[in-house]
Length: 287
Image (tube, rainbow, N blue to C red; front, side, top):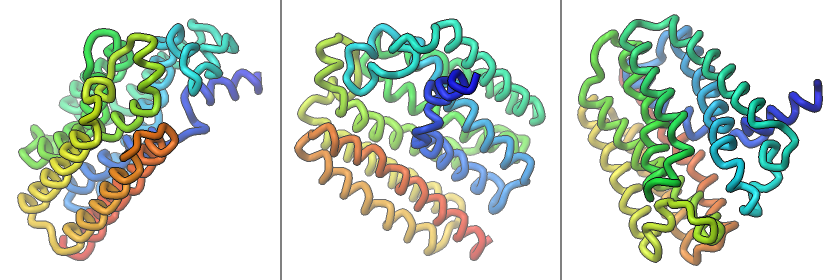
């Protein structure tokens, strides 16, 4: 049993929590903006746990969808499902349990948020299959990760998400598309051989330029959100500081070396964290 639990933990990437962090940061951005400061602690806990459950569920269904593909990719061929250490039924069972756990959390919120949660499940469950049908699975992931933002607003305000929420949504979508393209650049050669699709393949030699444009749009949208909500100098200083990570990522991916593309992807954790610190401090000092 202990060995099985270890394999399930590997399946949902608890040993590699970067995905949790990257989903958590925009969720926290939205909670602080919606509450105009520290949100209700119960709602905060529900969303933090929801992030962990939904990202973990996403990993389980992703490995199920890619179980025949991952064996052809050096980075993924030893994953528990692909290597045969657990079965497809077990992976689907883990996915179902995590979705149920997330649903038990969300039913403690208002009806609007519960209804929005069904969209979140559809986005999370369908994302892994998109690479077979179009070149924009990264955009699909962006929508899945950003969907926590309108949910956070409805949970706190009990109203339809305002313009600022959709600006944040678009910012998170563009940011996620950019960093997941960096992640796709790591596996681009393998993906080309297998025949799966990604923005890393679609963008080709323009990958860095398009990523840079998406990251610039992210900064612009975050700035507009700040102007719309009356944020102060601390918030804009955080945006300025976070832009340094974008410059660094462009430097890392310049030669398209897989290891450095992975470094660039991982570096986005610091971008999200700095933006959140700026939001939290600014609301504390300038409520």
